[in-house]
Amino acid sequence: MSKPGAPEPAAPEPAAPEPAAPPQVLFVCLGNICRSPTAEGVFRQRLAARGLQDRIGVDSCGTAGWHVGKSPDPRSTDAARVRGYDISTLRARQLQWEDYYSFDYLLAMDESNLDVLRREAPVDYAGHIGLFLEFAADSPVLEVPDPYYGSGDGFVRVLELVEAASEGLIEELLQRA
Image (tube, one colour):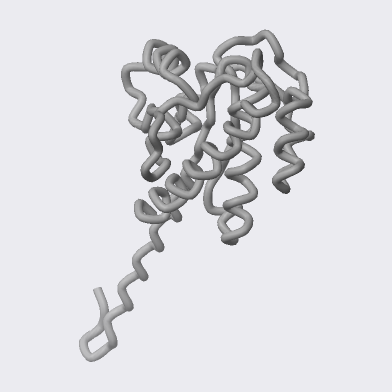
């Protein structure tokens, strides 16, 4: 109790709200050596070009563990390099249970990997599980085709699709921020 005539003690300042954690995006394909590392590399560079590299987290993985620890397929690396992307330092990893609690967006390259993501998702996963190409404006396809058993043209097609979807995903994330 304060003395009569004495000023009332100042109310404590309200605590500043905790800054929101940056959204986390995980690109997913089968082996994590072609499509998903390409998506990771393109998306990272597109974020950096907009100065957003510290505002959105990015990674990639495969639903299968055949290539864990390996570099991207040389055809992916070469196609990316021609278009100005460097994915050579990325290494394949397999989807982990913890990824569902670390990533807000789990984006599959095709329906088969989307099915795996949905089937293995914990019941309390509150993020977005979907196809990456859902974010590509006016895309005639929803799946990024697996170029592994095809020619070099397939790796170029992957880049074209990934570039289109990257722009749409960045816009979506900015609108939600």
